[in-house]
Length: 407
Image 1: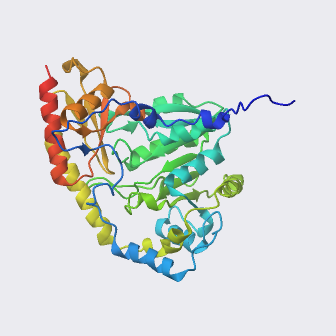
Image 2: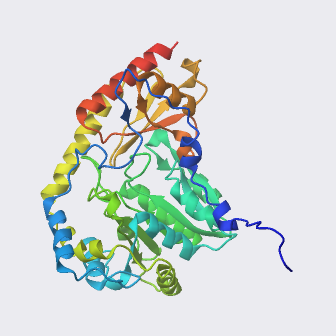
Image 3: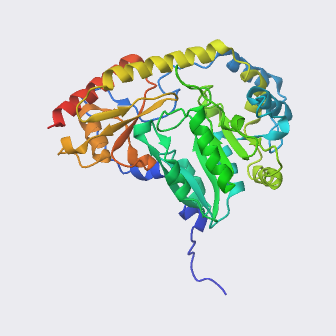
């Protein structure tokens, strides 16, 4: 039948693709105070202020590949073998061995997550996600017609998973559990004991896990990052990570999937992952070629990064403690902390979104409302990566803002 007009509908997938952060942030009524320097504590990008520096050897590794003219073509969709082998060598553990065949490269950790969710769940199935949690999980799943079920994290236990609530969400249609450790937005680092308890739930219900470990090894003194796959020989796990945070280069867009499966449960999944990589034909060829050298950056580079993050976290602890009406849950790692708001003592502020808007309007300090991460209750997320002077200024303004509105 001939059409009489250009009525062009958007696809179902495109119309159900929605990022919860954008839905909230794009509607924020933020007009910073022009009398005060604008300071953003909202963006989880360690390069924003220039105070976290990439190690020179990583830069030289990329320059070498540019000058070689040998890394300008199409790489294999799963990534070139030397790069995959380098990742396997860097992340293998005696309890969770890896070879190049167990590594798939993606265009950033977000692409790695997309591969994992896409290979494990079908339209109409459900996937279990942390609440609060990184909003992209929901975006990736819902765009594929996968139901998102959100399990609670407990701020009173530094954001550990409410395991009974997690288990209550499982049914015959559940495809996988997503576990983020260390956490964005919470800054939590799970203990070995808690990780074992999570694995026990997955074991009981025979569910695979997607372990988002983009902040791997970014744990503060007194806390230990333990790769989830190192604690089990039976639960199949797809671990995602990449260069963005630990190596301070989110814009280089290189991430990976680590396939942990000692019992063959992922035999078909391996084939499915290969198929899905052929949608975009692999990540940046130059960065792939440089990856073996990038991963050799000296331990001092990581130590300096963590020392700076810990110093910023200590400033956060010092300056955010004891503010009436505000209840920080101090971080154990990563780059974030969650700040609870007791709305009963701020009668002029309706919720966390209004708190963020008023704070920006009066003090030119921008945070993200907890609603961006489906946080129960009223919280804001703070990124504590700015230089110390800016961080101190921002926290002083938050204290003054709280005092002004507190009753």
